[in-house]
Amino acid sequence: MDKIQEQRPQKFSGDIEKDIKAVKAILSADDIFVYRFATKDGKTCASVYADGITDKELLGEMAAKPLALENAPKTAEEAKKMLYFPETKPAEDLQTACNEILSGNPLLLIDGIAEGIVLGTKKVSLRAIMEPQTSITVKGPREGFIEDVKTNMSLIRRRLKTPALRFITLEAGRASKTAVVVAYLEGIADEKIVKEIEERISAIDIDGVPDSSYIGKFLAKKPYSLFKQVGTTEKPDILCAKMLEGRVAVLADGSPIALTLPYMLAEDFQSSQDYFVSPYRATISRILRLAAVVISLFLPAFYVAAELFRLQLLPFGLLMTISGSVQDLPLSPSLELFFLLVVLEVLIEASVRMPKYVALALSVIGALVLGDTAVKAGIVSSPAIIIVALSGISAYTVPDLTGTISVIRLAYVVVAGSIGTYGILLFTALLFYYLVSSDSYGTPLLAPFSPLIKKDLRDSIYKSNIYSLDTRPAVLKSKNKTRLKVRYKEKNG
Figure 1: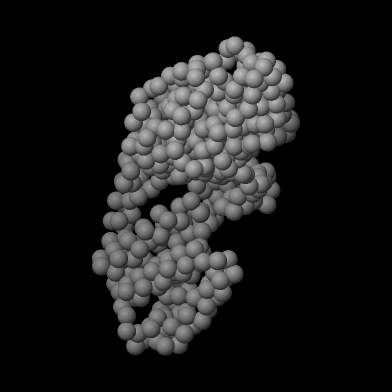
Figure 2 (figure 1 turned 135 degrees about the vertical axis):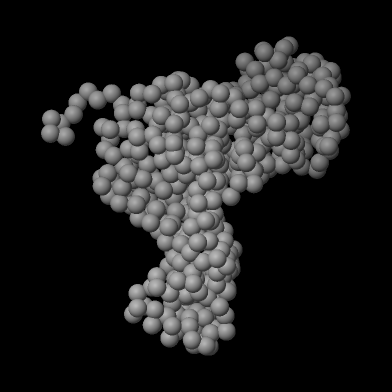
């Protein structure tokens, strides 16, 4: 346990040298500095701050300068009026003050006043707001969240200019003391879910929370589930749209990824661009994504099952081509596909972690040179490489499910090589049973298909026009169900 945690709440004495000594006893690091100055009548003042994360220029201009031009204040409230800061708060004990100093907000001490003043001069180095690499769209907003939670809150507030928008600020991590914000729309989000999320975050007892994914693990009711139970997004427009439907958002300082609850599997087949194109185009795109996931999962498994158990599943011409290419191969079809899928995963992992230009060369070598050489050497067949490549490309049409698809795809190949088509059907039934019985904070994972909710089908795989989306999703159980009041509509619309 750190030094701050071990100390009992200790009040300020009013003797500035004694208080500075007490603060330095808790924060003894070399980057904690004390800046002393005097008021007009000679009263000693001091500011204790952490170097590198405090704006020293702002501290001098808005705190030291106005105090140096006036006589010393008698109370903390009088001192606040003399400062030029819009953001100040009292620090009644040393532990609270030290936590603020470590967050970048300096502590102001005035001799004779037994209370500290925390100044909001936190200095944060921020990257520019730009389009996230994981959610690139042709049409629609291009802003993305960054690592500063205050900036992310402002991006939400700019889009939801309503007094119903609520932010609950919590803290997680004994050492990191990461700010975690729960955002929701009062009267739209389910208050029970908001309270449960707040309780779960408050109960987190871990030394550090470097990213929102840590929070997501604690919010998941089934931590060992193969499928994710918490939605994620890096775009403010998507997050606000989900909040308007009745979901609750969770932001963590230091992470550009926002969490959304409750979560449904159908969300991953949707894209922000779907709402900026015609409903027909959006529906076709979603069907293509679903078809691509099916191809990615089942194509390798059915290829293995057809070669080993059910040759009649393949057309005669294709069967003859495959038979000629697999002749004299050292590996069985199941081992061949499993080997190629593992090689695909290794190439993906290497490409992600290598420098950009090296990764590009690595991809070319892996995909062309290695694959072509393996075929010519007689280790693997050409049809197997084509199937694995098509399966791998198809999986990335739904980026948020890629990890899950990769694991299930390998399991399908093993089952297909062991039992054949019956094994594929049995494993599929088991998978559907698992999905049907799973939920996220009372919302079924397969909603609105299981259970079937006809109204919610209008924005699932099928995308209806804007006029038909007049109510919020029924599965989210929002108190305010009305989303759109149609006051004007084309007569022939």
